[in-house]
Image (cartoon, rainbow, N blue to C red; front, side, top):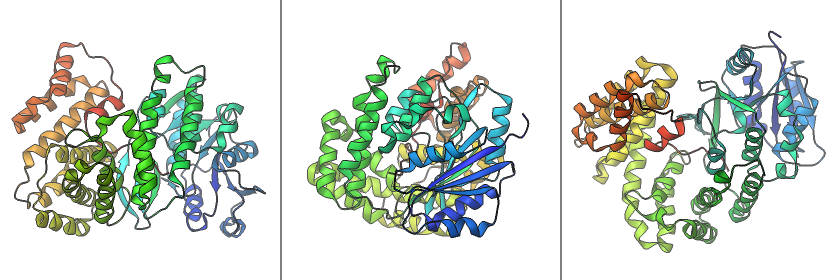
Length: 483
């Protein structure tokens, strides 16, 4: 049926300051055959006045008489909806104007797709800065879902038959981490996933947000992981990833605890992570330092003090970890400057560049790889001209740092494009990118992965690698977590 009715469901609890933006973004869609169900999960202050203020008959308010959690609020919306395609949106977030149109057209073109999703912009709230684009795996696996959080609820789109499945809303729906269980159960039940390759959501991360009892919240997410891994339909090799799944969970909540100054909880969670993998503190940078830095980049507005505090607390448990603090602080300022420059905030970048000079800090290969990842995301979203302009802007600012090597950044960017081309089976593009990278910076010739994709592309022995494989080869932001 052309132009089917679609339903958008917004679960909300004490979200008066943000839910207006979410509702407005739905009502401003280019696709207009919609209904919007706002499910108030027993908020003390209610939301009736907010909904009624829009004066739009397509908007309905549903209310729980007791707080049941976001996932059961979504179920209430599904049960009351009439649309053939169900969209979900968290109260913190909002849609791009073409969100509904793009997904409806893809599902019309391919009736086999039961679940669709898309990349999203990450927005730092309340300052409103865009700080990056999260690109989820193009072909998500159970391993992706178990070990991370690649597909947030605000980007979910489901056909009614899949959204209404009872197994999605059993007792696990009240636990933290239920979202990953739901995606996992859809996969093992045979639901086909499809990605619309455009950032169509704006997902907010909150500066200074605090959580009570991180240890208990971590335990709840572990229970959700157990429910998914304990499903008899999960392949044996995926079920064997339990320890790796726990590791990521412990690190997320340890970082939350340390960033809030809850040293005792942070140590408990960090010790649990170290029991699984003592190697997280090895290397330069160590995986632990990379993890802490990545989360700081999407957290505080002025995060240097918080980052240093996290390092100090961890160093009380692991004294050698303190040696990585200066590295992380320098990276933080460089990458935050890069974010501002790429997203057209040069005035905000200036202070970070001045701080780098005062620290006497110098970039390394990690720095160039992370900057090139941000540039590639801009190119993939807005096209090659936009990517070139972002590169010019970045180079114009960073070459004022005496140590900055523009050829290293260019080479790293070319390798990022090569790995992406290989992952997406654009094999004819791989040799030109790799060879140009070697010319720009001969040190790139030490990259064994680059030689591998070059040889496979030339010889025709390539096998398809998913986007997750490209991401593992090129440093980039970790799966977004808004605990």
